[in-house]
Image 1: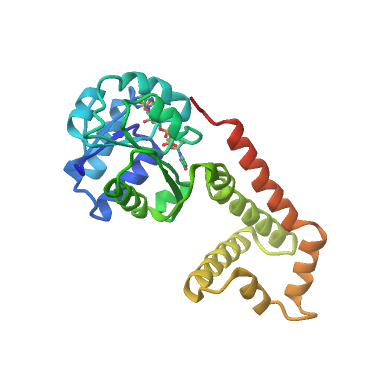
Image 2: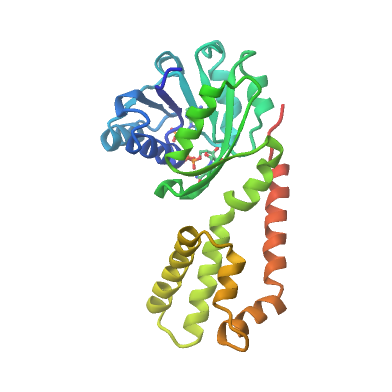
Length: 272
Ligand SMILES: NC(=O)c1ccc[n+]([C@@H]2O[C@H](COP(=O)([O-])OP(=O)(O)OC[C@H]3O[C@@H](n4cnc5c(N)ncnc54)[C@H](OP(=O)(O)O)[C@@H]3O)[C@@H](O)[C@H]2O)c1
């Protein structure tokens, strides 16, 4: 399998992946080709920042690259499918899509029979190489292509393989998850301010508390419930706080948030 990557779309997600794969040494910068719709200055900026090459037609991209990374907004995918007509060779190209809600069957149905298609759901932490990404594979994908896809997303964080019917739940959990965590942080900072801390100090403490808790999970390998119990002594301060969260239905609210986001993801899905 050719390891030249061709990005269709040059936005935030494309750049995060480009930075990840080049930094991780999965491909050399000259083996990354990028195209977008009309923002030529954006292409120039990517050339400058990463040393990649850019082209302005799908034909040039598909001629050069074996792996085509679909990194356009979901509503732009149908246009891209039309633009790719006659250009995709199933014996040569692997399609890797990060477009939220665009199904494998949609992509396979709009590409020549036998085309290998990978669908991925990364999250915004791709930018700092800490994405939680789930991938699923189309019916024609070879083991070699699977491994390449895992390498690509492994370069920007952790990857899990799921069946496609789990992708909406992934979207509800880890796709939307960073926003839930930021929301919690906002609340912690507001609470600190209400308790008399300056906003700066509250912000610094809340951020580091999150970073420290994440590192504890990673370094100790302990389950979150165990770590929580370790800091919650009976009758103590943390117990008072946790009791309040339980009384106010914090856990149920989170569970409901993930359920609604999952359902919304289902509603937005583009099938054949
Ligand atoms: N950002 C995230 O955290 C995240 C997480 C999970 C999944 N995703 C998925 O990643 C995809 C891209 O998101 P993004 O945030 O990177 O979007 P973005 O910043 O808006 O970038 C979209 C890019 O697509 C290009 N484009 C549109 N139509 C095109 C066409 N016909 N041919 C070639 N290029 C075309 C645009 O070019 P012009 O600028 O020239 O119009 C732009 O470079 C989305 O489908 C989204 O669902 C994103």
